[in-house]
Image 1: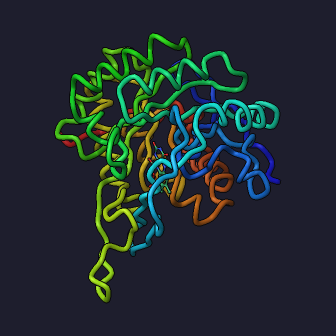
Image 2: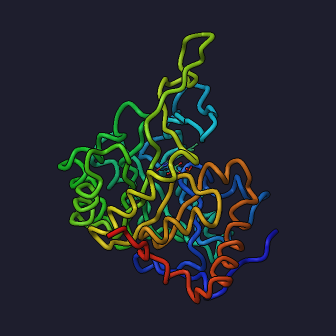
Length: 313
Ligand SMILES: Cc1cc2nc3c(=O)[nH]c(=O)nc-3n(C[C@H](O)[C@H](O)[C@H](O)COP(=O)(O)O)c2cc1C
């Protein structure tokens, strides 16, 4: 187990939540925490975003569900999850008992507008939850994926209804593939989202050239990993500049300097997925590296970095 890094230098505020450091494990890459307990100390991190939770259990997409390529990976898990009752009854009690310092955000999905609010309502008041992340941006499901975040009226309605069911901070996770991410962010914020998670995976396709078939069982999938870094940093900068809203930056982060790019572009915290799947020791190391990065440069608090990118005149 690693030593928690809880220096005040790394503490951040995120839409009213105090995080001991700005690193979260990204949704879908850390399960509901228990899966990772043997390999990393969740309580040493800023937080964990759970795998997606839907009203009913979802079996997800056919195998293979992940494929690698030189600049990242493609996945079509299809939001497989045991459903809100099982998450409430089995997974969240374990998290509440095991995790004391790290923050827990529950990632919520639905195949109909009202499903998001139903999941939130079912989990409101449950011990151990610090906030919700609405996934209106998943590229690899047949219904309730990216189109929810891409259609302004649907996006507004999903957020508005979820907002009505909780007093906890609400983050809306957007896709880099929407035509105008600033517009989508503004709609989510106006409808009651406290912050944004930027970004989800980017739609992609990998072909097995021998069989001439897609590498993934679903066909296409969501691209994650290092190829996403500049896309996510730009989305963060555009949205921060226009809204100044609290942002969880995500996409392609594999080092402290990758994370600092998101912070400078306007994120208050960041989530790491693919790189942590590859190396479960990376998150704790990255937190330590971030502390050193700040120390060497005389940055007294990581909070000072948010939004400090200097755009060329
Ligand atoms: C295997 C896998 C499963 C994912 N599942 C979810 C999910 O359930 N909900 C969600 O909002 N995002 C999900 N994501 C997207 C990640 O949370 C993150 O936004 C994305 O992977 C970009 O970060 P990264 O490049 O550090 O992986 C998933 C990503 C991967 C690789």
